[in-house]
Image (cartoon, rainbow, N blue to C red; front, side, top):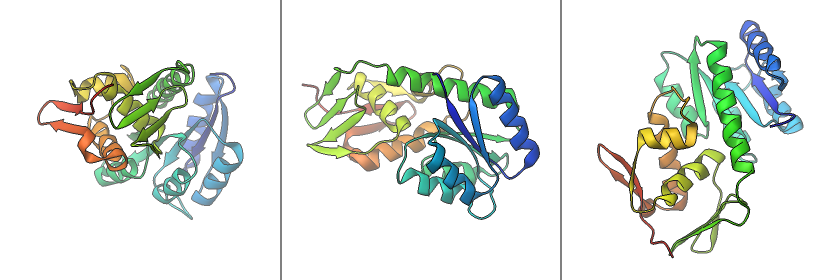
Length: 227
């Protein structure tokens, strides 16, 4: 992707400077903020392609910032959380984070996650404009990245749309969590598998519980009948 803009929001100067330095070496245009309110303003002004967001921020924490951001944007968000704060990770994912990295982390690891996410976004934007998946109740316009359920337009984030498409592409078949990680987050992903469960939960809430079944101990299956 050319002219990629990345926003990094963290109140620790050492982390902010280190992450910014590594990302700029990759050729990305990087904007920074050190507190919640300025991070939200920067996101609104610069409209980044990806946001790296610390969960602990002065003025407005990362959860609140992300909640407000999600009201108007589906920008890809990688959250930074403390290694021991499992609850923070789940809460962050539950309000719309696409991925997370735990502190302390290797800058190279974070850059690898950023690159994988951007490759996915680039692939999404170059998809077939005419491809449509039609089911009895669900319709997916792949080029426009839009989903309708019984003629009602459903708003999905980038990650939610990609998960639904991965399942819908193989309607009726069970896909393991590992397979969904590969298809949506990429082969390079080395985070925790629970990220799949949280985002599947979001999709179910939005399109209806009946369309995605859990096959215990295996994975998930999309149920609607293809036309």
